[in-house]
Image 1 (cartoon, rainbow, N blue to C red):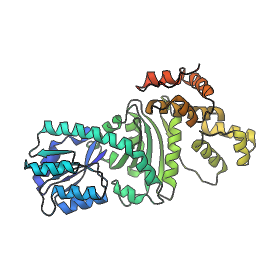
Image 2: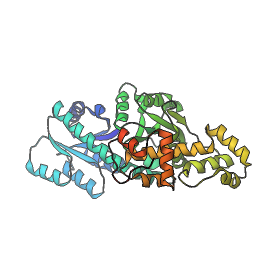
Image 3: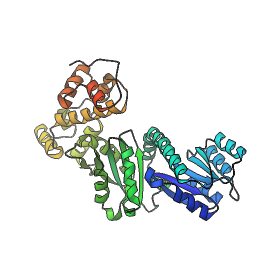
Image 4: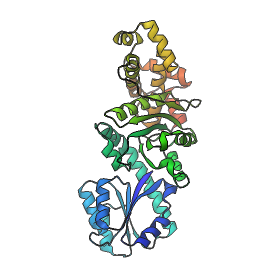
Length: 382
């Protein structure tokens, strides 16, 4: 859900603006309503807003002042100026400061709908391009609670529900938030990161630690798959969980669209072994060497691996690598040679053979059948 701030010193005008814009239809929610210009600037500095609709003339600070100060402080919010004045100088200043649009009061529903459609397209592009880096920066910190508060979570937050979601298109996730009006508790506190055209990381605080309604809502979306877990906001745990979920998502299938992941005691030797496999499946690994490293009998380790994961070691690695390669084929224009190396195959021809055995088609054929990206660089060898 994209977070929107509304600022106007006239309460009735602000409420009219909110009623005119079809925010929920475009995956947006009004996260703050303010009638004071200084309060608007404070919120923009302290919280993350994707967009802000602000009045051009307010006591204390004008809308132009607010945009100018936000730009000076590198606040990347998209601004829509709402004004009762068709003053060309105001328009020129707003455009110079990079305002998304300049609208005259009173707004008509058709105009608001068209503006929302254009704004959504921009926000989707921005967030898809920026969110992976934003998430990595947050997870690199020892204490992520201040970042969570900035994203709209309460300062009392102790545990997060974390859903790593695969979808045919990230736009599908927006339809979930229409349910906010009928089931407000479902998304009382939540934030999503758009990690690619087809993957979303959804963070949520769920009532009574019961995530089932949220999981069922996501699974109701056609083609959705989820790796789910909960993270205590203790040092390092959210980052570890997200890394685990990213790998576990590769193990989900149409028949098994949900995998639940939990973090175990770091002193559990087998959990450490499995974590190494999950995080480094793209490297040269062998169960024999891992068994020696973690002081396991090889035969026992092999049986334990099968009972814990449902796959033998070789099939587990292959499944992770193949699904990672398939995702990269659809989400990037990179060559199959580069992708094969990135997912752990040093022999390109072997990668082609394994891929065809797994999916029944070559990587280039898979890319052409499933997506719109074509690769002219190299012909697959069968």
